Amino acid sequence: MNFGNVVDHAAREIPDSWAVGDPERRITYVELSAASNAAANLFAARGVDRGERIAICLRNQVPFLTAYLGAMKHGAVPVPINTRFNDEQVRYVLATSDSSVLVTDEAFESVATNVETAITVDGSIGPRFQTLLEDAANTYTVYPRRSDEIAAVVYSSGTTGRPKGVRHTHGNIIANARGIRTYHRLTRDDIGLTVSQCFHVTGLNVTTTPLLLAGAENWFLPEWDPVSVAETIETRDVTYTFLTPNMVRDLVADDNVNDYDFSSLERVVVGGAPMPTAQLDDAEATLDATVLEGYGMTETTPLAAFNRPDTDVRKPGSVGPPAREVVDLRIEDIDTGQPVDCGERGELLWRGDTVTPGFERQQRNAEAFVERDGKRWLRSGDIGYLDDDGHLFVVGRRGDMFTVGCANVYPREIEEVLYDIDGVTGAAVIDVRDDLKGAVITAIVTRDSDVTEAQIREICRARLGEHEIPEQIEFVDDIPRTATGKIDRVALGEMFESLSS
Ligand code: ATP
Ligand code: MG
Image (cartoon, rainbow, N blue to C red; front, side, top):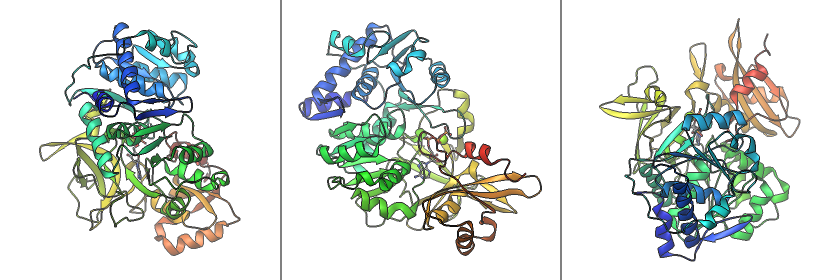
């Protein structure tokens, strides 16, 4: 089944219901269906083949979705590109995905001149997307696709290296959207807000595609701005959204949002990076909603483990139970590859309906997938454990772990303790290499009071193992983060590498 059909189904059932809006426009399901048909006709007229890549470099706005669905309807493969990439990075994506068409706007003028066909939504260079859509027929026979055929290519965040082009099949996208719709009980009555960007799997597949499948309404915000978010929630009666832990923190800290009415908001999914448990209560109070942490990867579309709104058992710090109806989880010892017992830590391996068949660069598949008991599993690179109730706890990335003496140290566990200290607003822990001492645990901290190094050290001594106590504590104004809100440990490492020498 072609995921592009989803919007046509809704157009038949609920033609006049609102489908998607942004600060400039709002359209119904029948209009979105017609616009995406026009986009499919337009791509066909430009000679795009089935299976060919169509790059889309647009912020969250209606034309993004029109182009995304239109590409799929034509049987082509949309490739959303990170709008914060510089020219060189966009060129890298265009080259690795072999895209011949780019849909973009003036912000990316310089890269647009490098592709065969550039179409811009604002008409700054090349033909104007909207004009082309108006000139194209708005009926289209959706090109049939099997569920195992590639529907889209979405790039990972690039936390551990260059962003990876991850293939999503139609089946992956449908399984993810169905799973999220079910877990978060999305219905036609829901009104969603998409402020996390659609070039990332969170904006695309935690809010946008599940809301489409549910026949719900979705509001796009092109830029992150706490007041615009608060205003949209209040004026549009938003019921469901996704935020990164960083966005939650910004909202909680922003006094300008205090006077807005968040009472319509019911469920806020948080993920993409660990949500500090110390901030959960404040988050729920500010947002007036249930905050549901989830865990996923671009490679899992991203549905893998999610807290659900309809359960009494929510454990702070847990990303929820694995989505067993959709994926299987194997936790294995990082040295032996043998499955670990309940409660023990190991690397998380995933397989199932939301797991990608592989990467655009097929060479990557060899290290990302392993065979266990005759089955193909995706290695996540994340370390975690299941508790007795089947709740998953993610303790960190394999690559972030370091060894002190003979013990493994996971930065996140130290960061959790730091976040719990009054006056500490942000924390990142890295190991600074020292020729004599080996790993020197360094805590980089932001604060909003005069909490001292000595106080922090004292609390760490009380709550952490001897080998986990930060040896160096550095106060900074801001902790560098990646575009998707993760601590940028590479940048931090570079900032502090010379500290101990
Ligand atoms: P790259 O794979 O390019 O290095 P990335 O892994 O950061 O970058 P994404 O696919 O955007 O790219 O992110 C998935 C990763 O995010 C997971 O593997 C995990 O490390 C982290 N993550 C997601 N949700 C959570 C969560 N709730 N708690 C802890 N970590 C999370
Ligand atoms: Mg990754």
